[in-house]
Image 1 (cartoon, rainbow, N blue to C red):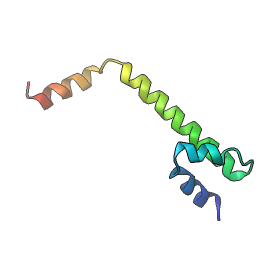
Image 2: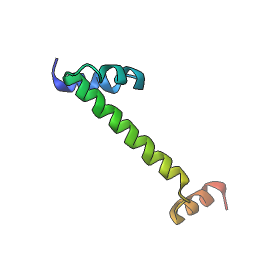
Image 3: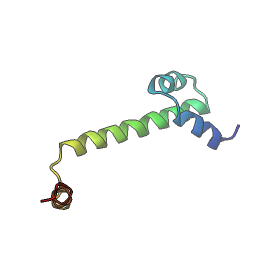
Image 4: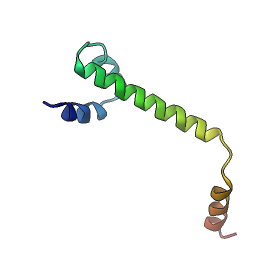
Length: 68
């Protein structure tokens, strides 16, 4: 199995499964750690985005959607 195929398999695993695989010490473990890191970065960015006030453009789009 090539790296691209392994990466596709790793992307479909749960966080718990990735944590287990990351303890193996082989190439799959490296891919699992990279996927966990990517997911954590995404979650942190999403959480920070949730706390920010909407931009003016987002506010104007919301008004249009509400019919104002």
